[in-house]
Amino acid sequence: MKRYNFIQHLISLILFIYISIISPIFADPIEKWTQEKIEVGEEVTFTLNFKPNEIELLQIPEKGYLFKENEDLPYAEITEKIQTDTSLSYKVVYFEPGEYKLKVQWKINNAKQSSSTSVQVTSVLTNEKEIVDIEPPIEFKGDYWLRAFFIIGGFTLAIIGLTFIIYLMKKKKPPIKDAIIQSIHTAESLNTYKNKIEALFAQNQINHKDFIFVLSGYIKEIIGFRLGYNVQYMNQDETNIILKNRYKFSDLELMDIKNYFNSIKYMPNDESISLQRAKEILQYWNSRL
Image 1: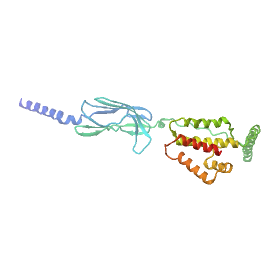
Image 2: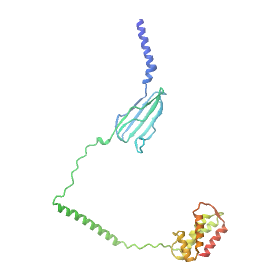
Image 3: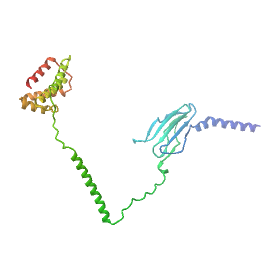
Image 4: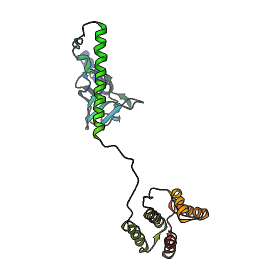
């Protein structure tokens, strides 16, 4: 009887040690893939099952593309992620063959663990059937020089035909005349700039830069109206040549005009000009042109 009690106590002690010490050590979460081997492009599911409050998740990937270190192109995509108190599930599609593990880390009993199960991804090309032999092209039978004659003659006829087609197309088209930059300057186009100036004068504050830009267009429009061709495309130096030759502006005047216009047009300023000063400048140009 005593021996039986001793054996019973020994079994209870072993069970206690297993439950208290050994069992927690081996009570790892259960991880698995729905398939151990898949092909590139197939979707596979990874699951990690555990008890509530059993583990502490340290590192888990998020939904989206997965990249290898120092590579720009993804090797896989997580299409779905589901996380609960007792499980973690991923749906993954791999783009390259190889053996892969998901980078999932957790802590249990203050010990860090990582996912150890892997999935084997194979290339779809390995399952393709052998390429069917392709018959060689029909060979030209005959003497070598005869074959060369036909080949060269074919190229020659093709070139002659193409040249003749191009000739006919050019013959049908009228010759292209040199384009002349020209615009019709009328009182209406001149009034457009006058209206812009009047609109600026009607404002409470006249922006100096806006006034100079409109004035430049107005001056070129007057010159173009007098000469009969477009000068709006000209820069300040080209316009100054006309002012010097036709309107007898001196070099000193032209230098002052260029410096004044450029300082207002291209310098970072947002100053205003008085209505009286703007009218004086406009009157000056009306009297000179």
